[in-house]
Length: 227
Image: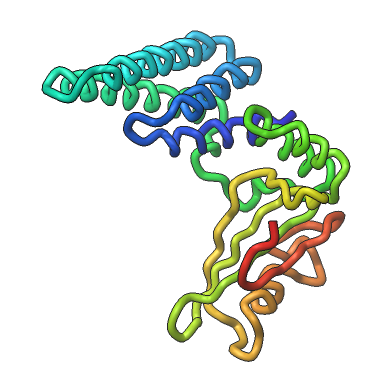
């Protein structure tokens, strides 16, 4: 199982950690940190465990202030809880990016491009919050790359392609990573955004293409995404 995409999922969870998030979000981040321990250098184990413990302390502080009646005591308690949470999330991000420096910002070259790599990445990405149905779909569905395209408002001269490797199954599309966004100038005004993206991203020689996939289908879509 790929440590890269488990770390990506962990870092993505930190981005959901707004002030006083719900229990599920904090629990998910705590679980991600502990799941990363086997992939970390032994010298990092204590830092990961400390970050997880600090999240638990922040979670308790959030529960405590929410139990207080309105007033100054609640305001002070909330401020304290928010400070604890911010520090814990900062330490969690530091630990995650030490394990995988690319977790905070995936590059196009990080995208899995073979059936085996896509399945492994999808299992890792959904290790903690994926359902049993989704993990079964990863094993039985079709690995592929989804490219969802849209033109900007107005003249539509700029096109954004949202690129995601994953597995297409009866339950829908199961992603293997957060999407990559590629914005480019429209190549041909007569063509749809998807056809413009196809022309830009694919080549007869895969080694020269942005999407260097040969063993999985690439699906280009306009408008509403099919999930």
